[in-house]
Amino acid sequence: MININLLPKALKRVREPGYWRVLAVAFPLLVGGVIVGIQVLTNQTITNLERDVQVREDQLALLQPFLAEQRDLQQRQQALRQLISIAEEVRRGRVVWTAEIANLLELLPPPLDAETPAIDFRSVNMRSVYPPTSSPERFEGAPIVTEMSISGTVDGPETLARFVRALEQASDFGVLFQNASRDGDSDLFTYNLTVGGFTGGGQ
Image 1 (cartoon, rainbow, N blue to C red):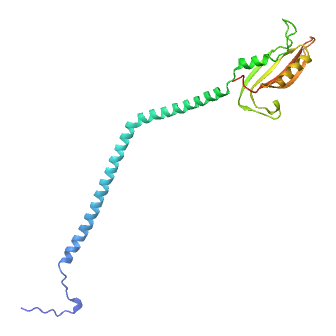
Image 2 (spheres, rainbow, N blue to C red; image 1 turned 180 degrees about the vertical axis):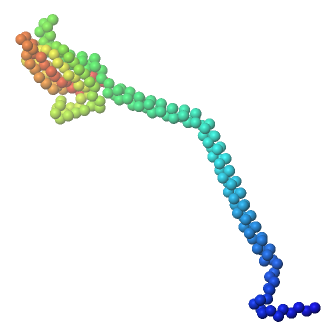
């Protein structure tokens, strides 16, 4: 039996090949499989990264006591360096005050008699000057390493003048005259001097 389709061409049913149906079903499945695979791979990567982070955190927690000890040692080392630096400055700027005072006493005018000194020291304030400093207005610009503020009494202006001249001529000292005045109704005078030492007591 022969079938003849007399419908217009536009209305005729067209039979498409069967593989298009297969592709229509397989393509979405393939895309879905790729997406699922990427998601699984991404999840696995995230899991691995989280595991690595946890391992690193565990290692860091184990190292914390050692890191704290290292920080403590570094702080102690820094403090020790500061102490060594201070000790070095003190060592370099030290003054042998006994030698300094002995050198100063050698310049005193001779006493009036065995019991009465021509000049005395009622107050002596001493300080070390480190690093050595100099000023054009003080001690003729010479750098000093010690400074002594001296006050006391003297039997007269002439004795004080001799003491000041001796300090001016000494190679180890310089002097700044502050003031002198009569001590009440007595024959003594009070004085104030600032004495600079150039050698630090023979250090």
